[in-house]
Amino acid sequence: MKRKILFIDDEFAPDFEDALGSYMSFYSLELQEHGFDVTRCSSVDEAITALVSDVFEMAIIDIMMPPGDEFTDQDTNYGMATGTLLARKIKQQYPKLKIIVLSNLTREEGAFADLLKEKVVDSILLKMDTTPSALCAELTSKVE
Image 1 (cartoon, rainbow, N blue to C red):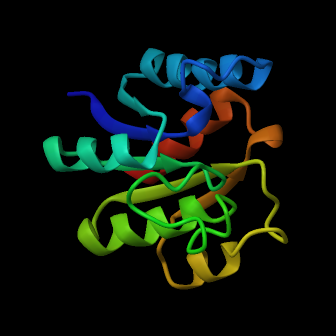
Image 2 (image 1 turned 90 degrees about the vertical axis):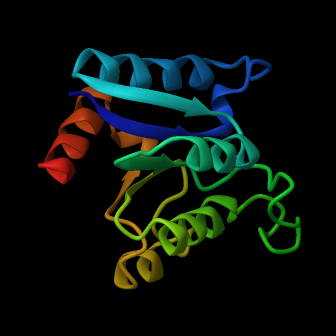
Image 3 (image 1 turned 90 degrees about the horizontal axis):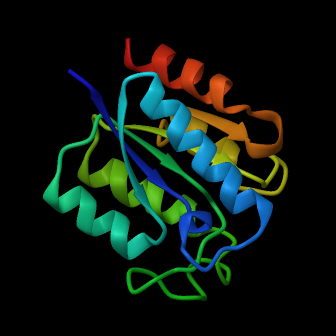
């Protein structure tokens, strides 16, 4: 049985045209090749809808995203902390769901220490340092 993963990153949006958007697709393709069932969401609103309509074992969340209808610009520091708020909301509603942060923000730039200390997220990965195969290895280690 395939493990269901919710992958939330605004770089999946159809209008995201730079190379990083294409690279994000490589992540999801690699996960699928390793037996994961990946649902890609390009917004907070899509993610909330997916969580209500399906059951996931793990979520991969970017930090910098537009706030959508769920949060305000002020709450998210104009998108700089949207993923942090989303991770907290998901963990509160789905406490058994494992959460991986995959972001371009470094640990110094985000509120990552608190997320780890409070056990909101299970690990934090930096996009520029994480290959698709490394992401698969991290997910596999968290679900076994």
